[in-house]
Length: 306
Image (cartoon, rainbow, N blue to C red):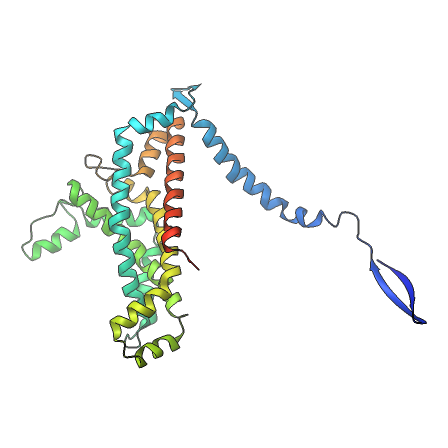
């Protein structure tokens, strides 16, 4: 509904429309987003707040007593926590960079005009990502079984002794790294490929005119162009690695000798095996702080400095 006001300018009558705001118009946008906000508050904010409150309690059977910061102090003295943190750090420092380097190489190969059946090959490398975490963990547990696994059988054809994939501390870490690399490399390669396809061809043409060879074009054109996506995949891989649970749980259950015990698995054990929910919540918050610090460092060194 509009009201009409008249004003006279130099003898001419000008009709100026004037809007009348309907009652409740200001509140309408908030009413539309209210369901989403309610769901976010119930299923996100409330569990986060309750988890922090729970971390301030000590659990003794069914009895919970207020303990203040005792659970966080316990973290600093818990050797298993530091073992899990070290194991997770090894995966982060060794497997993640290796996976991203392979993914960049695959993305460059996927973009090459010399590659035939590119769509089929891209699909083949991406398919592991759609495999369920538990399913592919069981698959690798069967393949890498030291006694009857297909991998050791294949190695035996060439006279190579059986490898204790899941029963030796070093080989168990390698098996975990192989499983993670198989599952996530193709996914990251597709992300890199999407960025490569968006890079202007003129940059490569200009570099070729200046006499740059293939390696120099890759170093000075491709890698700088991939920088935002490298940051994205690095942050996502860091978060995923620090939360790593399914693969070590299915493959080795944290063994042998806690060599594949990760922070995610240690959190699960305390919460759902020992029912020490206060200490498990403290581990979760320590993990959140570590993720936040690493994210800030990564953005600081790889983010846009312009």
